[in-house]
Image (cartoon, rainbow over all chains, first blue to last red; front, side, top):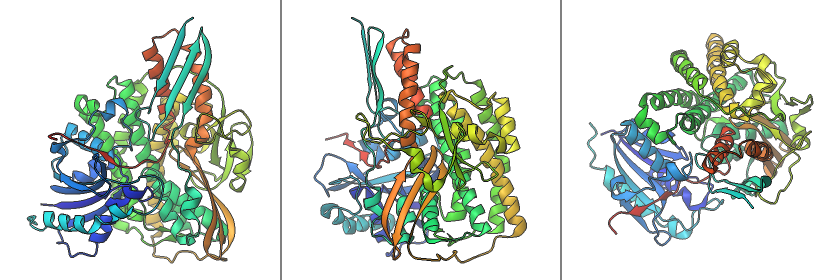
Length: 156
Length: 430
């Protein structure tokens, strides 16, 4: 399975940088060659194009789940409501990029990848560089979780 | 007493957040404005005390859509501050990058944000179901534009190979030729885009204003040149503050700008009005076919000007690639600064209009930074358009007035805040 581990978020907005931080930390790990790493930044609908090239995508992103800052959880798009109504009411190109890209990819039938999302509850997403302490502490366990997810993926 | 109040919170399909507020009492317009609730006020703090070489990489993260534009404006400000002279190859590769970004953004705006309004489907998701070929065409075009940027600078969002004085990575001849072939193949999709926008009935609304764009490079200008106005004034980029004249207004946390009139417009329509004479001949043909002749004073036609620019950038990118292949692209060291201090400004036409960065550098570190974004320059003009439009359509139902105002704001393609990608998640079984 062609596999992508992708961090999403803006490193200039506090804990929204968790995706990039996890990808950065994973660069040092010996990942199998068939697994790509991508710090995708804030790609919007670009995600439709990125994801259509893969069979399996692991996404790391800040997520408002109503938890305490630094709590994180793994889920699939099917298990959650990703504010799917956004596009009709207050959707923007940028605001909920992953949710909208998943909707669009599904509507077009171009999204065939299996997707796992690791969501991290942020403490702050104001304009500032650097992660809060509780979110920075999630980097190591999330890297381990990603390695567990991808280590048995069939390279073929 | 009759009273019409419209308050559109978090205007949809615009990047960031904006509220439209309209208050009409007994036929008199009491209030009509675009309220901005969020804007980045962090720019200088983000760059202060950083080595100058870091600046373009930091600012490229401000926006996923204008990553190349912010990086280029940043590099030009730094290069002007430190006395860096660029090679012809660097100038051409940067132009190609900007062409890619302009196309990418315009395609998204025209197809994902504007077309659904006129095709009566509300948003791109139902459009993907009712006319998947249209949305797939947009994504196909977007992929060519993104790959053009990726070929030169690693990737589109956050172009890592762009650096002060040049590049750290160069495209191979076979990559350039493969991309050229895809640009040639994209002409059919460009034509289909022109046909689509020729078939849409855009609102018949006009309001003359001042249009401002970079110009004076002998070509349809995206980088450097001078600041030119349709009211007949040109100024060097270093004097940008005498054009923007930023002012604080009560209803917006973003500053407004004004030059010779109460407000001015930047963006594709302003560029078209200022630089029509130097459009690529094929883009002029496209403009003629769409009936677009300067000076165009209907802001709804900004999207049509964007479609013309898609054609321009495609054709000019083909020409630049031909020139580069003919000369050969060579690995070269970035041009060196001649000093480690100074003040400099950079002006770049990004998809939404002219963007200015200005840095002061001492001993190789940034000690002062300023940035004026295109959407900030358009806010005052949007307010004045709305104040003229509302009385003209006051006999229509409230929903139609609201929709017209939303479409007007969307036509400017505003990027009101540079937002996060945080997911809003609700677990189904809890």
